[in-house]
Image (cartoon, rainbow over all chains, first blue to last red; front, side):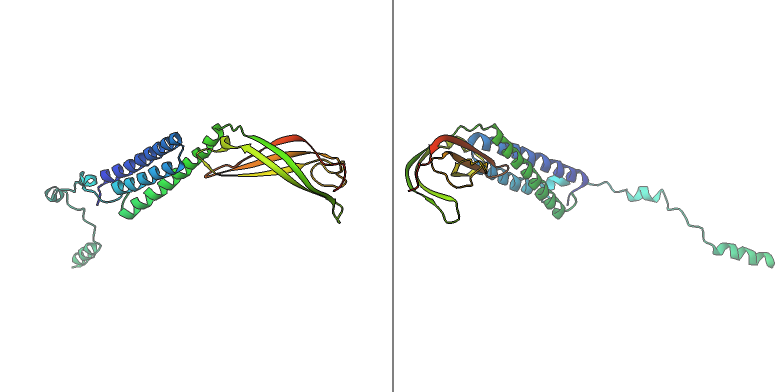
Length: 96
Length: 138
């Protein structure tokens, strides 16, 4: 499980890692004049990025959600809904 | 990035999109290459030169082809397809049809197609002039 902050971190990390690996692969492959080297570097980078950003690592669950404290909730009661049967009772009393 | 499956899908999709962009850049890098091939085609022998039943002439040649095509290859080259064509004009046709070709002059053209690993294919040729068919059929 990841918290909201963790999810944002995972997404940003994934985008940055993939772009960095692609640029590095392109640069190294072009310099070494090897298409295969470029593809291998990029493939390795994709696998590494998936390992880092896809599973629910504890690192992505550090900013826990703050639920409302129960004592604080009691101070603010739920609003009451008006019940129609109370008006009927009043009219029968007036007749008597 | 809500669940494991959501994030896995996001990684794969983004990775493939970036791969497409990278391949486009690789293909663009081929434009920086300015090839300078050399070629020499010698006609060693004219084996026969006949008139065919359908009216066209037929020639069989033995050639000695030497070429240096190493400048065509880049890191993005899968293979280079090379062929030699003989080209000539007649009063009726601009290219390569006709009969009565005795004594005709023709060009030998070395064509190449550079097939890439990814992206655009380049094709070009060298035209060599100064070849002549014999005056008589044989």
